[in-house]
Amino acid sequence: MKETMHEETNAVVELQVEEPTVNKNWWRGRVRLSTLCLVTVILFDLVTTLFLLNQGFGEANPIFANLAKKGEWALVSGKLMFTIIPLLILEWARTKRPFTAEIGTWTAFIAYTWLYVLNLLRYY
Image (cartoon, rainbow, N blue to C red; front, side, top):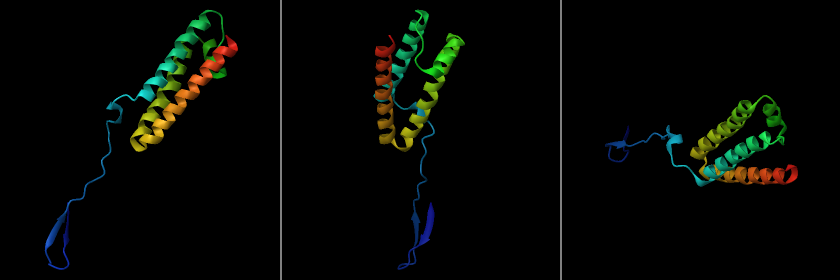
């Protein structure tokens, strides 16, 4: 609250000044369809990758191919790390610029799905 003097009447006027609110619980909101779609395709990729690796196929992504050589847990840990960190950044960005974050999430989903299908058709 801030007090100020009204010039014409010399009366003290109280002004309500609201502090900008920051949503400290930004991770507790509802799950967006775009985020759910992105997580679904990433987890589907992880499961099918593990299945195909056990069938004798290889990993198309050179970063994850290197992790796959170190074992399944290294591959799963790497894929989860490369999933969780960007998703947290996207969800945080959603609190600042919701429309931009939504477009970014859908773009990531479309690109990931397209690359996944392209690599399935190309390598398997």
